[in-house]
Length: 126
Image (cartoon, rainbow, N blue to C red; front, side, top):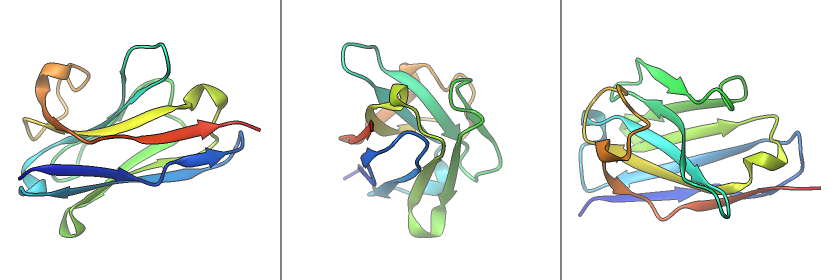
C-alpha cells in the first residue's frame, strides 16, 4: 500500500538547521510531484514547498523560499526538505504529501493530494 513516512524533526535553536526526509513506498515515486506542508498549533495547514516528479521544477512559499530547499532522490524513494536559518515561527508538524500529478501547478490546493504522511514535529526554540 502507499505509504509516506516523515522523519528528521526535532528541537533546534533559532538559526539552526534540520533536514526532513519523506520515505515513500508502495508506488513509483518518479511519477508524482511531492509537497511539504506544515501545521502549527491553532493554525491552518499551509504549503511549504513542492517538487515535480523528476525534480526539474521546485517552488516554495514566500515565507521559506530563501531558507528551505526541497530535493528528491527517486532511486532512494525519498524526498527531502533542508531547512536553514530556522525561526520560532517555523515550529509546526511537517507533513509530506503525494500530488496526484507530476507537476507542481496549483500545488497549494489540498484537492491535488491523495496520500499524506503522519507528520514529524519541528520545534524551534532557545
